[in-house]
Length: 276
Image (spheres, rainbow, N blue to C red):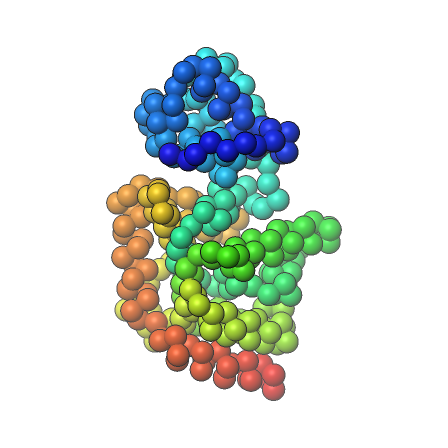
């Protein structure tokens, strides 16, 4: 169970939601564990909402309103608190990234957002939003760069990324942009708590994952999986499906190049893009 902490309820909509949830729970004389049992979730889950460390969920907010006799109060606050500067389908996964102890990503087409250079992020954002104002593109790029702050904190997650060879062969943004991106990947691969591998074309028969995949584990919550396609994403919490995805990721990890061989490939390809 998350320990209560003093929050300024007017700091942002999420903090206000958390303060109101705590006020209503305490008025009903329920502990976080007791409310969680009635809402079919853990007490620590309730505590994360009250501490404003996790975005509120509309379905749970509806249940909280019913249990606490608060009409549609928490539902309305939830809609306000869920506003975000990332794509709505990715917003919950983005929140979980900040809480994860380990993040295992598989990328079949593009460099994962946590590993992108700003130039690379701008190139793919512009490609995905060809008619958007430049200001909107820059907002999306800034949001992606902000996500990367978790890698530079005092307690970063363990990050394991498997990139399909096709990711490195597509000169997104032009030769110089992809060259800088390759050098960035090589730099990140040398960090502690970070492993990067390339899955070569020749290994596709040994390990096949059809879409982007991220397996996230936590110290006090079950693992989750996030998958993403063009303009859509899905957060998977079903234990059997999470286990299936984790086993598929393990097969890809075993079939991929070693971290040392991956570093050699990244350096070689960067040089190729330097002298196309």
